[in-house]
Image (cartoon, rainbow, N blue to C red):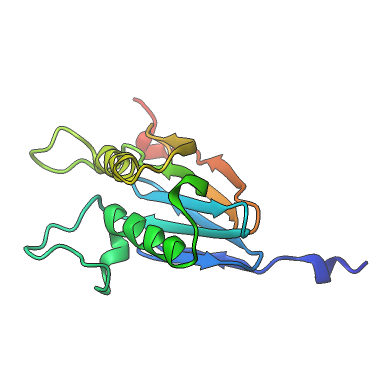
Length: 170
């Protein structure tokens, strides 16, 4: 068998994007304070992944799921993934959920929590509010992560990134 015929399509997920497919693919992304949430339906072999930058939209009229910038926010991304899975007849009880990222890399002035902490809290609270059970997670800390999501199996491979010279203690 020719190995080229068995190679999966490779997609790089940028911040503020979501990928959903019933076709096999390798989806990779790099996370610092951002959060990626993966959904997988073992029954239908459908996978989804998002890359949220900030916890929640702070506009006067919060995201209704149709705005262009909604996928930048962890809360909205999870809502959209739930809506997409529900439209495919996939109930919350059969979704395998994994969460990654949320490193302590960016501090907001006047806030005691890093953006990574806020993103992680938002992801976990949104999942809990929707009765979605977490199968696996790797969040927090001071190092970024590179993840590869297999859309047809729900598997995620994770590599923690090395510290930069700026992060090295003096």
